[in-house]
Length: 392
Length: 247
Image 1 (cartoon, one colour):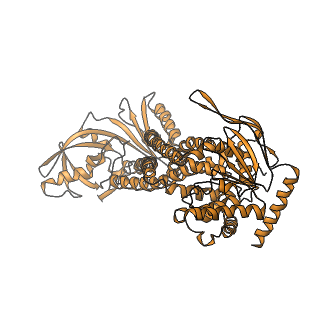
Image 2 (spheres, chains in turn brown, blue):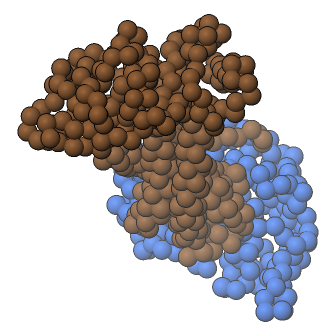
Image 3 (tube, one colour):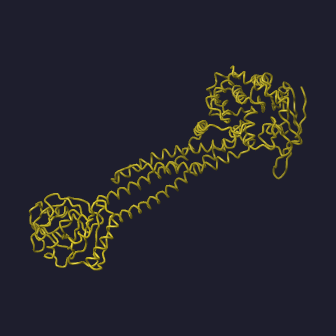
């Protein structure tokens, strides 16, 4: 008698698949639960991933190399040349003063926010111009202005489009339009809405609003800087220049990390939901297998009489449960992928399929099948041959 | 067919070797009881039985006499409550379930009244099934199954499913399945019980020819005394006890 009689895996699989065919409609119903579970895992992971990468792309477009410094007490002036000497890692430094004004262009009066800054702001905020140019360091004292996209449209509402070279009245001063900005999204970090603002050189701000102080500084780092490290260097430099001035420094990286963490928490929540549907599907599989085994007791008895060991019976039914689950997992993967794709399409996101979702989704589904198939398979293997044979 | 003959010759020498040393089946003081509704029912009571290799025996008895239980014990499908049971040189009482499964697979061929073929497998795969539990590769198992189908005269029905076969053909497939493991013992439980008279005598002739030509031990459970007369010994089971007669 050989102790080493082993049924070949390929034969076992063939038999399991043949067995499955007879399960019919009941197995289809159990499959539904499994398909939904697998589909939700895969869809949710993909949607979560796409949302996260979309949010990240949104931030990255607005510059991960940007720092925004906010003063608690607005200083009259900031020595940007000195600051630049102290921190050569900064590519551009642009202080900002804000005020609210009303503009008049050809009898068209519009309220807008006035932003006084340096020429460096265009680089620091990555502003691009539709027409004309941004003011330069040589225009510090001139009455030149750059108009945001939306503001330009509002000023053109009277029928005459605003053009470069036109004069806009701000309070009692006439400013010449030097350039008009392109429509571009603001970074969430940015203290101003570029599209709705009128940009003028900072030194001239006092003419328009005597109380407007320098509230923020927008800075952009040179390539490949460690942003948190740079932020603390800036904090030290400002403390040195402005004697203990309390400043608040925002960097995009913190917000991106916060956002990624948040979306990860969200995905975990979704995965927990997917888990619940998987367990429901698993219970369905167990139900089908228990019924299946109850109906096939006699067959189990015959197999035992022909020399099947307990483990042969266990593997047979475990494989049937697994094959059933695998079919469900596969259908679910397709369904989940389609669902995630559709969701991205509706949200206007770029769709990318995460391979990890396939591994995680199908893997967890198969594990559920294994777990819930184990009990019925072991119950079948524990049957006494003579009792199984007597079953009708 | 040459391979088949060789295998049969080998089997013959094996059977003779076993015959020389000890009986194929030896039951001593076997009892079997069932618990039912708080009462203990004694189904087999101090049964002693010896069957030598190559013999043919009929087990006769009315329903409820305990002959099914005796068959289950002979087929290693059920363990007695007490007594000694030796089969093919092994002590059955101390064997574990896996060892019993291996003994059934290698030494016993079962033939049932209701054929008990797997409805979803073809005749060929039904015959090959016991070999897969030995780890024989599918193709080789099918080749050997074909030899057995030829032996029972059903070579042209190999690809049919049991539902497409007549009762007699199904029982032939079942006999081919019982033979494929080259067993020392064929246990037939009312093998002709579901067949008409003509087919029944064909099936009995087939079983007897296997016993005659290959010296396969044959134990047939039946309630039909005319069938039992064709076998060398008749074992009557009555009230949980056995009495043996020679033909």
